Length: 73
Image 1 (cartoon, rainbow, N blue to C red):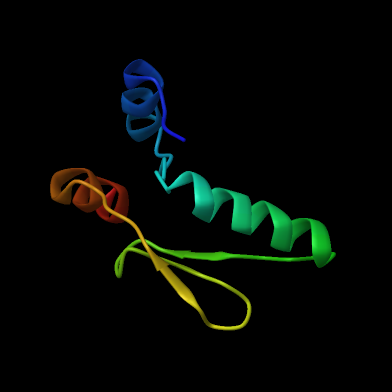
Image 2: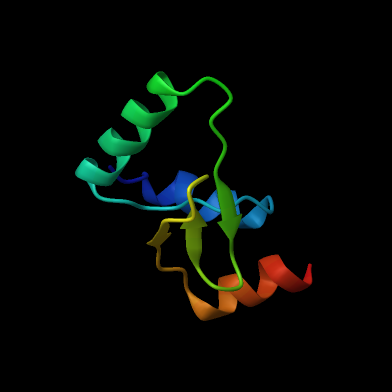
């Protein structure tokens, strides 16, 4: 799944991090959320990974300048 360009750009302008994952990754996360009440993910922007509760990491891409802006205000 992806985001419309305007929405994607507006997310960064408003301090939000839109993460693009493959459809299979999104499906897997939805299945895990449905199976485990209280399921939580950690977004590590500095390392560019999503960390699952069991420690598994899913890497994601983000433009270096946008990453800098989000990390430094």
